Length: 338
Image 1 (cartoon, rainbow, N blue to C red):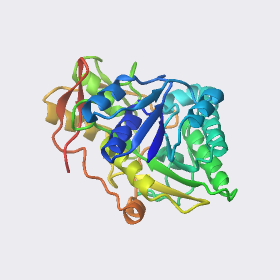
Image 2 (cartoon, rainbow, N blue to C red):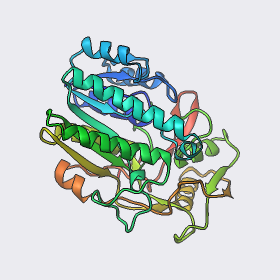
Image 3 (cartoon, one colour):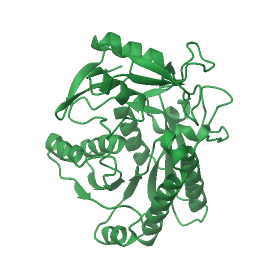
Image 4 (cartoon, rainbow, N blue to C red):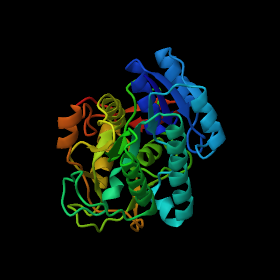
């Protein structure tokens, strides 16, 4: 199949591109490179020997997107493009609503025009907000607590409304929890520009001396050690989850929703200690105030995705990790097999 991957040079998108190529598919990527680099795609091409058609523009540029669809025959679209920092979204909500919603609407409009109606959407577990219970199941009510989460929930609603038009759309939304790690080739990984928004790359940059210390946002949550608990899933497992979803899209005029996680939660301090033990490096940290919109604890129920897509995690975080070379810098990545 010919798969269009939006945001395909980013962290999760690039790993999914790699898995799609391994699975024998033709891949095209659209990315405006706002928080990524084309280098990830060049490395994937080097690894696989397969060409990736790269298009550098923003999805809201409707004319360019329309031209791309006119010149290609796409079978499926995987939609990763969008801003994703919870903290930033609280302080810049207009930026998040405008970018994430407008880009998705532009994409769906062009897809509809060209009769491409198979879509896999990169959603997030943040749509749940503070859960009434854990593990979190897909049928729980959505109560996002920050603008980023609201954009994901709104897009899911838009997509749900689209399938109700009875025009043959087949849509899957994947709500994944906290992706970490890197491909076992050591060639691609998570290396964001500026100060990282996610825990593991933040720890990584402290471990290699790029940053002086880690900020732990809040130690007064109602959890065993006071720090937030999250479900850390290996990025390769997330990527393979997208491929599995593509092979088992719902029937026309339906939308499927699945959690992607490990089904287990670990605290921030547990993650820090695991890195210290595995790397032999100190990870100095300071406790800072909670970030607006953050949640004490969440981890996934994964029974639905195991049953419907025959998917489950193959790698876990809490095994020995190693320092991996990523470009000219060394970034700490957890990539141990389960």
